[in-house]
Length: 306
Image (cartoon, rainbow, N blue to C red):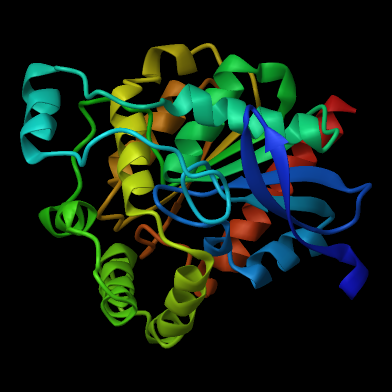
């Protein structure tokens, strides 16, 4: 790829907020939107991952969700309490939220509108998979294909995170840059669910880059509330006609493998790819399999639609 195929980050107004986005690839290639997960900036879609997807003939667009990175930070809402989680899990008492996943889905569609994209391939990871599912449900004409990675349907019967992964999610925010860098490494070591020394060596640099773009702990809390307040999509997903690929790791400690299986079972005709030894992360050693599957799925859907 040459330099002209990578546009630097820009900010656009969409759905009433500012969204920071970045594009890799040819303007005339198949548009593919990457939607990141809870509390994760767009740069968690690694630069090289985006470049490799673009080299497969996609116009790759990654962006910061609302309340994270360089996109608009909202206000309101209180830190989630363990008591609220217990009420939700055992008494089905809904969690209060400043916004829900449908609002984040509208952000995605608003970004597409701002970029003049009528329809695109959506690839979402974790909460991003939930947002991509919601876009597919609410705006099916805007979605050429759906790839849901390490995500779930919101079905309360899916097993909860491991105790260790849940503790990472509920831990109080770090108070300094040094503490953040350490926490970043500890968190991803748990989420990867195995030994990945080549990834761990890169974690301090990744943490520095994320920190430099700006943290928003309250925003992460609002995003978590959005997920929990949005309920289950399982029944609605039975009506999806969009070509769907579900990718999940066999050792995911946060969104358990059953979450991916439930997603694939809920969507008619969905293909399920379980990746042996993958946790709740996208280590480079799995990229060939992941990118190859996305490439085959999205281009196959485009060819059938032509």
